[in-house]
Length: 363
Image: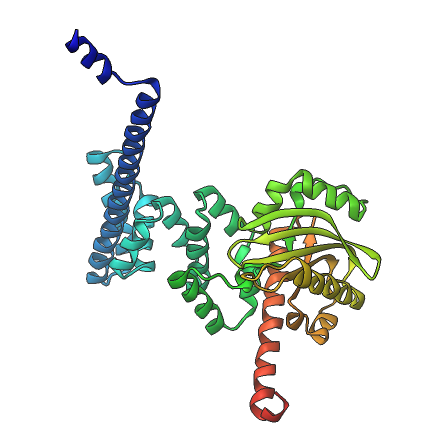
């Protein structure tokens, strides 16, 4: 009888079984993830080593066309032995990886965090600064390979405020992001914002735009950045017994600040600054938590008046102005527009720095 009682006491309840199952499942999933990371890293390092080996061999034979010839020959030999995974195209990816990331340790570290498909996208970005931008933001926001390619295709770097800064500033901001996971506002805010997914027709109101954004809120947040958390639509604030309404209110987790967004269907006007300043000061007084940074305002408008924006020194008021596009232009046209904007902004920065150097008393 006592033996039966002991056996009964040793039996597991459904709750105990479920708990044990949960622990074992977590161990299996962790192990699978570790194996996947190890396998991915080993494959990426193999491809890097293959690329370096071919490159070293080619450099040893300074003959015109030798590189093309050796890649073709190797592809045939390796494909016979190991299958179609070793095409000429793949071997050129390997070569490019070794050329783009000559430091083995840097490539190894990347291979522990990102897949070969991610890395393959990076190696065809010619600008080192732009490449570093995509690498760090990709790691931070844990982009899939498809999202990464979408961001590159939509020229995210050129649309981000940081692209209009001097190269040294870009490098410093990226270094802080890499080492301290510290994100600057210039890495967050963009211009223009691409809102083609809203499906708006030729004629629409600000209310239509706002409603469409809320209907497609997930896509909107993907476009503005994954760290934005939606808080309110038409946020009511009362100042001197007068009601005002902030179109959209978000919170940015990494910047640790409220972000007020105003939607304007017309060009940016001077009055928009005063309106946004009023909203930001109210948010600072009534909504900002002690451990948060000052609120930021983002005015999304149909078009920008560059000289207005420059003269009004909006940055000092924590206000950003950006265009939004509900219809995508041809990418060549968008690229030209963005490159012109970057050149204008950087030239303006150089002129300001030169003036400060010549007239230091004006600072």
